[in-house]
Length: 415
Image (cartoon, rainbow, N blue to C red; front, side, top):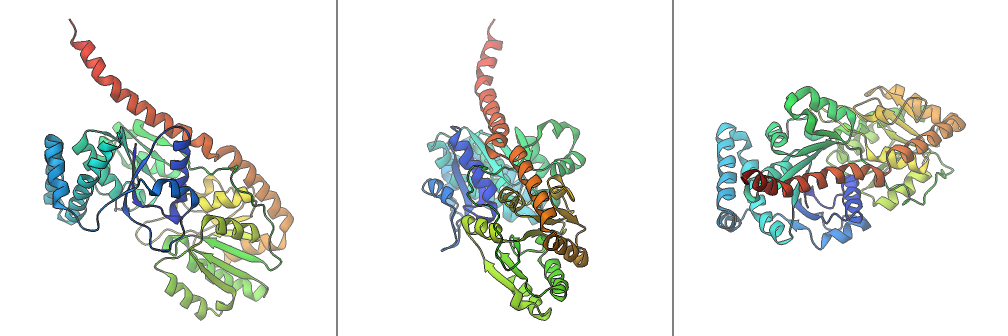
């Protein structure tokens, strides 16, 4: 099968890499088709190395020759994909650039997909990867499925989402919260195609256990974007500093808000306490979580409606045994149950966040008890070796059904 991806590999989307690796262990050969290469020098997880040699990347500039060759090889499909791109661009001129870019990318990917013997297309995210998937399905006649997550559901960046769902054999969401949103916004005819397939982590992989450093480290992991709630945490740290002076905040990740957040830390008078670590490899994140007194996930709903689903770092912290404080946003309460597996606070309330962090630091025994319950739950419900079986079953059922369809038609034609 082909996996249609935005950037690959991406350190902020390790859940996709884990899923791909687990499917391959179960005998599903994957051809990654990606829009963006990783930045030069960016950390690359070890599991991604096995996929890099076969990954097909979109050219930096669209190639007319790719489109012409696709139209020659698949005359009906090439014409159908081209008509789809033109017709929708005329209806929605604001979408023309994505439609043209997706047609070009699909035309480039199609020969590689054919040469690899791909039987099915799977798009990660309902945004441009799914638009390319829609075009590829038109051109090649292959079946398509989608994995939808958060931003692609809660913002308007996923153009043609209803058509993508109609053309797909099935779609998965990684949280009940996201699936419920689709059930509420999409026609009833599509509801049977929507499946909950939770992310998972390899519960046998990590060798880290929670051994906090002597100096209390508070950690946040994630891209430096609005929905992650860094601004709220920095203001909470200012309040905590008045209560104790031995704290350190580790900010793991990078992104467009880095300059603004560094300036905010300066203006709040807490810059000496804050370590902007930049992007870290997975092993470094695990090491940081093991040394931290608490993982904080102060997620908020961004101005454009974007929000987290269930951040995977919460599952990683739970497996290591690191106490968790998180916002009561989106799907986070599906795992973080207040006073059972962590502490939940309302979003955008720095004082409540500071109080919850302080509670973890001042009562380590209670925090340890909650962390143990979180570890039990992540082991029982988020083991990727079990969770990926549901996705594999959907994929194999789709391929089998399409392989058997011509035989059924021939049998029906017999007198």
